[in-house]
Image: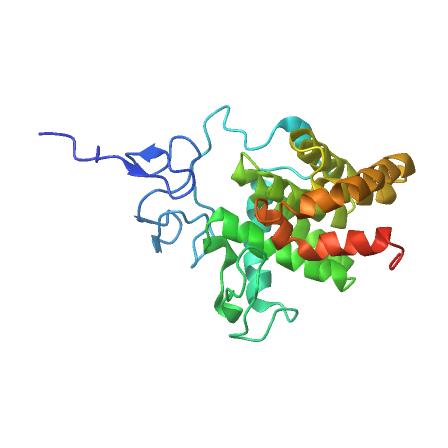
Length: 269
């Protein structure tokens, strides 16, 4: 009798690799509906936690499946991907559901890159979103908390957000700016500097890369780096702004660019 366990390949919900079994052989993501090994509740493809008991789901990634280059991912605070991150993901799920800091139930949670998209109120589960939507939602939350001066909350969410960005390899310039900005909000200037360097290596006049480099220099006491980035920003701004239709990240982060323009014009600190 033929082996019925070998089904036709289907795309992994996370990385799109061909999958024949329960877990993706490339990234370890759950690829088909299956019962939770802890409580037998049904787990949907792509789930990383059981919604009933909170058990972690997923196989270990194959050797060599490293989302970010290691030189870009060694946070000075010692964050690590593994069991600790899985526990943090579960904690964030519960926090997002029950935090008094959240928006009122049913209110839109306009995330960067998902303009006007609702998060879904208290029943929303960010971790059920695809990785890019998770990253957008968490970026928006970390930035809002940072603007509100809620340092403890920033430190809570930043490691989660950074680990989600790690899944998005290869990162584009927009994602690198997001990752660097989150790191900077959390006080990790080394990761922020690495992302600014990567952006400027790819596009030396990129306004977001120059803005991130300047902010990182000012935050870390590297005044010379900040001044060089500011000078290049001034020189490049007019030409780069004409390319805004070609660079959608300029539209997405228009407020960041406007803030830098005003600061360099002496209108803000």
